[in-house]
Length: 135
Image (cartoon, rainbow, N blue to C red; front, side, top):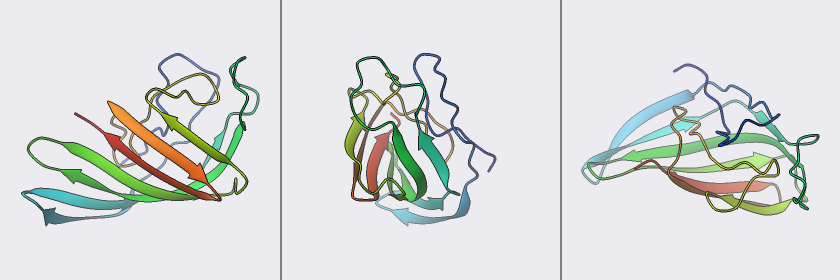
């Protein structure tokens, strides 16, 4: 699988997402669907220099190393993932209704680059936990 972009911005922003390549993918059947495990090489989530005027949180969300599972069935496609981040002092939540530091919103799957219809990403103490739906 070829590289993808991690952050899908709704507006054009000065942040360039790092292209990542999926590694270690494998499928198993789960509840009349499939669950495919994946992992990606580390990438930066640093928004320093391109922060929205009204954003007051941390700009550097660290370097993320992520793995997850893509669950697909007849009605739903969802990623569940966890990452470690070098930003161990950061506590933040981003979602389809809570903008990133750049003021942009959106999320593209580490699995295949598909843009999420809804997502939530929680960062705390060096760990990132997230989910994203692709309906």
